[in-house]
Length: 218
Length: 70
Image 1 (cartoon, each protein chain N blue to C red):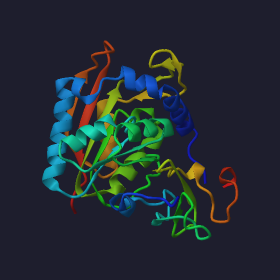
Image 2 (spheres, chains in turn brown, cyan):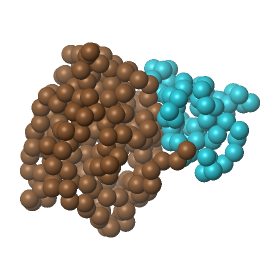
Image 3 (cartoon, helix red, strand yellow):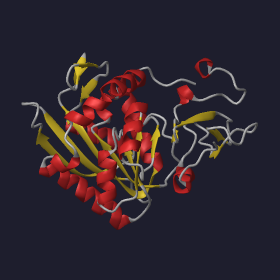
Image 4 (cartoon, rainbow over the protein chains, first blue to last red):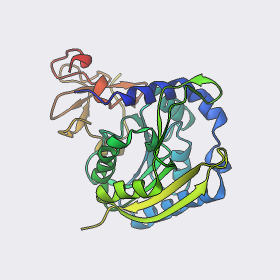
């Protein structure tokens, strides 16, 4: 049994850029206020429902995993890139991290109180998103919440050859419309409760979305 | 050294293969091995520096063959 080939490009790219990423990407404290507000609202929803721990899927160096922990959640992180997870574990020795894939999650059914997928799913080709969202749905407890952050667009595919200060990368970024992301989540069984669309401060003309969705209780 | 994992994490971790078996530290032949073994399919997943690598591509099949040939 093997994994889809695109995963290898994501893993290798983030292994390569891991140190530069930590240096260049703003930590949660430096994020724009709306993004932080979405994370805080998600944390409150998950705390109130109290259904289980939170998985930070595509956690990178684990800074948002730690941010969620500081907001009172029991959070752990999963990322495809072993180097990212190594950095996450070094920086946050008290938190738990595993190397895993959103296409076949290393988690049991219905045990998670929440899932954060913060700017990680846009590297997944759209034809694989139903698999990924089905995995989110499978692992969340009924009543559990998902917060998904993503770049959005009009089905553009970006294939950068370098990133994070000139390091070689080979992943793709798939920019789906906000409506398409919501549709795919609904098709996976989620009830989409809120969407925030905002300008990308660093990339003029581009937008990002934060979607809050719930796995229905029935 | 045997695998030391947070018991709460181990409780919700599962094999990423479709059987979703529970994972136990060590292998049937070596309880001290730095591996998590699936109770259903027998795949073994490496634990490197205390971090489980739960990827199908890196799993060692139950018969101990090459993961790339699965």
